[in-house]
Image (cartoon, rainbow, N blue to C red; front, side, top):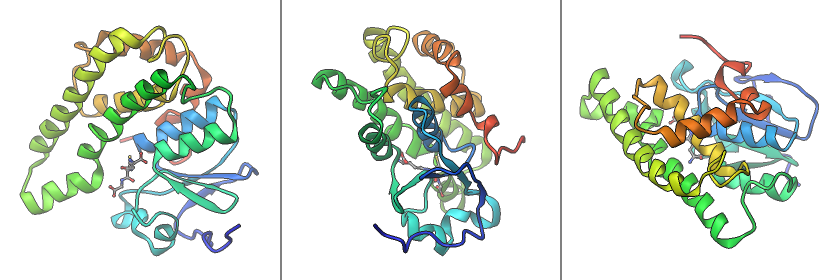
Length: 234
Ligand SMILES: N[C@@H](CCC(=O)N[C@@H](CS)C(=O)NCC(=O)O)C(=O)O
């Protein structure tokens, strides 16, 4: 067991709930949102530690946080003093730790389809709207606010368009039939970002139908950005 990762966290606000799991998160981070849903679905209590991605140039760049995640991104889950970053890896880990409900299905094709849906969000949409990418576009390529919004809308629409086609075939109440999977954990937070950037979601009726079903689940409600201790209205 490593005990050299966790410092005093002078720069991050903690809300202690006395359990072995600690989640470094930012209320608006869609990747953190995915993990919050997964933890809630599995009824795993966790201590929430907020990392403000904007304040003071971003707390994710502090030396203290970089010891946990050298990539300077949230989320980062700590278990047994060991850090895990990348929401896909975290959710896979949680599936090993607490197998019910299983978020990555055991049937090979269902598992592949789940990961396919997750990755469309994880590598096809979210990285293109990440804070660091947007800052780079602004700073070194001169993009103005309006152009950045168009850029974001373009990539989200492209990703949601392909998801809509896949989900027409794969979904029941949720992305894969009537069982909640990791695919739902990835899809729903992306819709919060889509709305934040004023994307018209009417071309995606299947996605909106799935979202309606998740809205009735506590695990999804409690994971929403507005329910987090570091939430700030804008
Ligand atoms: N693929 C990563 C994405 C992580 C990520 O991009 N996190 C964003 C917030 S959603 C972040 O920390 N951004 C900070 C920055 O860009 O400086 C995951 O799934 O965990």
